[in-house]
Amino acid sequence: MRKTSVFLLVIFFLLFFSFLYLKFFYPQKTSLEYKLNLFPLDNIPVLKDPTLDYADLPLSAASAYALDLSSMTVLYQKDSQTVLYPASTSKMMTALVAVDTFPLEQELLVTNEATVSGNKLEVKTGQQIKVKDLLAAMLIFSANDSAYVLANNDPAGFDNFIKKMNDKASFLGLTQTHFSNPAGLDEDGQKSTARDLTLIAKELLKNDQLKQLVATPYKKIEGADWTYELYNSNQLLGKIQGVYGVKTGTTELAGEVLVTLIKRDEHQILITLMNSQDRYLDTSRLIAWILNNYEWKNL
Image (tube, rainbow, N blue to C red; front, side, top):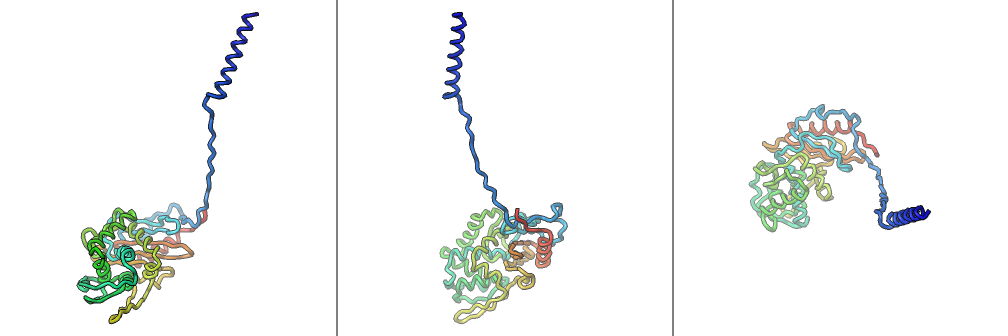
């Protein structure tokens, strides 16, 4: 009887100390509660036929890239990372650096820009031209001499202006883009890709002044003793509904280059073609292909 009592007492203490251990010392299970917020995705471009093959679209361009700006969705691409000569689309970066460097109303002195080849205003040495007018000539008419006036007037010199163009490219994450001159002339080290040019255009469109200039079909600029009439080099302006720029480019090594902004039904699409045999036909085909094969949905 006494052994039984001792046994029960031992059992009692074991149970008691087990309870104390489990209550105060045993690791406690922790429950974490997370709150998940799901936001609706508005106006997302979705292919009507997911099996559609990009190769079904015949383009003469060696490289192409189309981007929906609201959702940053790639709508089309063809060798968009291939490094090629950008021609005068380089002037988009020249414009971005210029507005960072000069006030729009500042007058700049023309030095020796009349010797520059290609499209030009034929500015004369000694002329004083406002920055806003040089930007207009460069982005509307694609004047090479205007690009050089801007670069030569950098407070730290021409080379520093080019450095700022390349620094800006690095800041935007454009690892395959490099500039050697402000006009886009064929030169070693003047390179970009269709994707990178699209992102430069996207940055340019954030500036209201530049955005307005690239969409301008005609503009007259005047100084004290000079007048220039500027006609936009982009033949799609006014011919295709919803086209608002952005920049043309043509050189022997670059072929035909074109960056296009098109707005339709509140959608904004940037299209870049490089080394094209017919940039306007290619762009027209790509616009039609995108609008026929994509639908914008709220997910």
